[in-house]
Length: 74
Image (cartoon, rainbow, N blue to C red):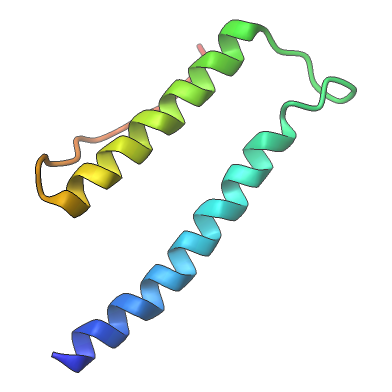
């Protein structure tokens, strides 16, 4: 049992840190000096991230299964 816990902690630490870093990089896209985007683009990004977060939360609460998520501004 301890093996499963240590593996969970190891993977969770790495994956959550990576996800947070990737979200920070997505946030960098809000720099209007470097990028041009519409409010609709921004809303689509935020909505997609929120849906993915909600699906992950549901999986941990065992209330729903996570379906395949894709994202595209096109």
